[in-house]
Structures are given as C-alpha cells and as structure tokens.
Image 1 (tube, rainbow, N blue to C red):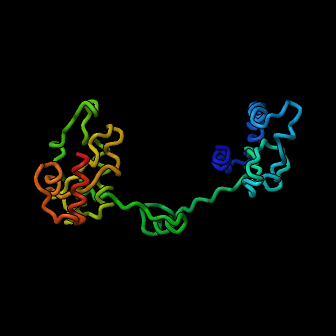
Image 2 (spheres, rainbow, N blue to C red):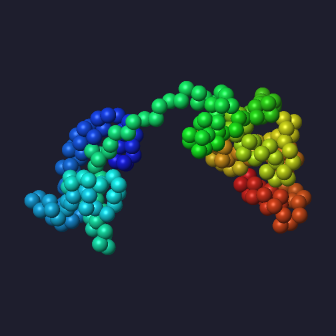
Length: 235
C-alpha cells in the first residue's frame, strides 16, 4: 500500500516531505507491533530496526537510505518495511496534443505509447436494432429491476466483439435479426449479471436449445455439443 500511494503521488514535488510526516504518525504504532513480534523491549530498537539499505527486499527503493526501518528475519533474509518518505518525485509525461481516440493518427500514437490496443467499438448497428420494448424480465433476485437494463444494452456490444460476431455454440455469423445475448449464469445479482464476462452471443436457434429440454442435436464430444451442455447446466 505504501508503494502504491508513493507511486500515485510521485508526480507531486513534495511527496518525500509529506511522506515523512505520514511515516512519523505511523512510527509509534509500528514500533509497538514490532516489539511484540521480535520480543524486544522499548530501548532495544536495534533488535527490531535496521538501515533500509541493509534489507534484502526492495533493493532499488531502499538503495542509499540509511534510515532505520522495522524488519523481520526469515531464513537468513532480512525483510524490512518501506517508508513513504522513500518515494521520489518523477516528472509526469507531457500530454501529446495529437493523441486522441477520435482520429486514426491519435489512436496510433496511443497504441505506440501504451503498447495496448484500443477496445473495439461496439457494433451498435447490430446490437441496438432489437426489440427493446419486449425485453422486460424481473425477479426477486434482481429486486424488481429488469435484467435488460442500460448496462445490458451497452455490454452486449462488447460481448459480441469479443465473440467475433459469431454464435458461441454453432459459430454461425450473427446479425440484428439473429442475435440473442445470453446470460451464462442467470442467478447472479443485478450488479453482476450484466457484466461482459457473464454475457455470451448466441443465434436464435442455439438460444432455444439452451432453454429447451430436447436432445442435444450436435455430435457427442464435439465442441458444439460440449459448449451447449455447459450453458444448459447453468440455466
């Protein structure tokens, strides 16, 4: 937690100064804890504290710091607590004006800088051309709220992108007239049921097969057979 806080505030010029103040507030409590852990007394601080640069953990962070920190020894390895005052200021990277998600050039700059690919745009032309009015379903589990809420209509597009616009069972191409976004686990609470990880894209026929008690039409042992059975078990 200390490292995380230090990294977050590392862009501020006085992170070390104010980090020292926070360390001072915590010192008395930590000293009491390590007195119990090490079995040392009030004046025997050398038994529970060591120079930070002499610890074996966080060598880069502790390098050059001779401030004594509480430590424990385990199998010959000295593990010391780090301090917020050891955090150093790092100048934030300047904003690149051309970096924007609204242009091809801007998206390219973003991917080169972060080494990440931008999330694909939701295929709203497919997912939103549906019978929204007809999708009203509530239960005690969802506390009277519809399963097909705003989160569902937004996330079903991301799920369709992930599934490459194909039915997860039979792999047929999906379009607005042959698409059903299925809840893998319909027993989840309303705040989790419409997460992308719980949504799968199915064609209308396979959606019916999931909910109907008829023999599995696919060859036993095939990928389609196994996938359909896995969805049926959760219904």
